[in-house]
Length: 58
Image 1 (cartoon, rainbow, N blue to C red):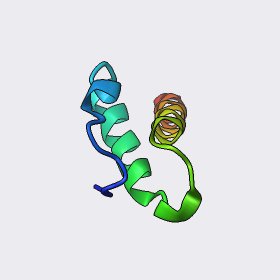
Image 2 (tube, one colour):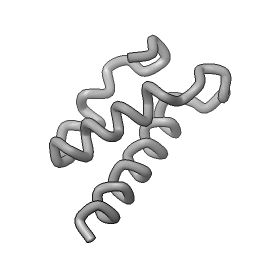
Image 3 (cartoon, rainbow, N blue to C red):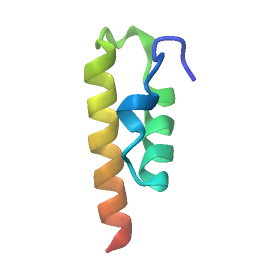
């Protein structure tokens, strides 16, 4: 995981395992130079992961 995202376990703990895994994948793919703060990046990754999950469920 990128060093820019530390101690995010609490943010992700209530997510379904598949959504948590996808959120971590999205966070790892985010470029460091985006200038986005950690809280905003985590929120965006969770939203994208939840959308991905809903789309994959049909």
